[in-house]
Image (tube, each protein chain N blue to C red):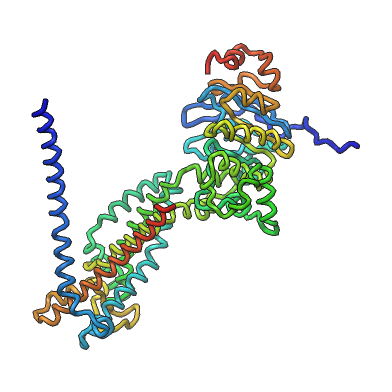
Length: 276
Length: 260
């Protein structure tokens, strides 16, 4: 009996250690990347670095470009994504919706380089005829829309049916019920999902190579090539010059900080839900 | 001095040959019930007998369930609410509903919950919302308990209070009929007693149809009782007759507790 108990205690201890080791294995690469980026990137940070063009030792155009891209992509992608999600969750009880749902799931997993090449073929070559900021935003929307649609559908489905029935039984129309009762009930889930999706596209590189190309100067128009942080990092890392590589480290740190602040915003948004 | 009494014998709603299905399964078979204005009609019967399905047909909530179907007629003031050119939304404004589990809108304050019907249906134009909210909460005997907390979330009060809030929400629209689907089944005895007193008071202004699995409750609050079993209406009549001299042996068995 005693030895059996000791063996069980040992097994318990053994699995505890095993899980602990795996957590360390998973976290070490992440922390070492973060550490390296901070160590190498932090010395670059200065007002000059954040606001000037490459020629003057800064990455201003890339920061501006990424912010414009995030804004434009959100403008295009979030309304379409949320409305599709509403359709799938509230009106999705038909064959058309079932098909759309599975296509949407496939799109969520689509390789981003394929999205980039598609945008290159359809928008850059056929529609606009040049590399452009708007082409980049549309390509990123292709990635954003399925994620937002999916998370919208999931958060709307968490709203209990009794809430919908309460509104319908008052004589409210379906659209009014969805807009004024169901959507507000799912608000924190919607905000969280949308912010996470935006954070995801902020770091996308492959579609940008094929669409916005990059630019050494500040924003010149939606139909012109534009700089962006992921492109800046990619280009700088290919340079043989130490100064260019250092700029790349700085750009990487800025991008990580931007994504991190979006994640913190998510924490704040979903933290509000838990307090309620 | 005589004040003109409301005519209590006129028909408010009529169910004529009502059948209802969930997919292939028939839940209601040829239900014929007359519901008189300003009375309380109780629907009793064992679980699964179709009580809830029946009252959900009365405001066309039944059809919201996928694959649900109904045939026959429901007359509201003599007009068939299943008619092709009748908008179910308009039916639901005239026939309000209180559900089994209290379901106040979780994102709204107590005040907004009561005003929700008026806001959601666009019926608030030119109306004094404050007065309507106060009157509805008073009618639901909730005003004194919440008058200082109107800005608090509707879900912050007790279950019994939430159910009375839902009743206030329904009567804020001044429906003609109020349907109640086992409104006390999730409540404690004290909250139940309050709702029962309220039901009796409501019939002055409204026609009430209440589903209950509690026979004492039916005998306490209702004027008419319908006993249903396996989707059929077994017996319908004045509550006193149903409970004291049921005509159908099945009704007698159920009321004396032999099954159910």
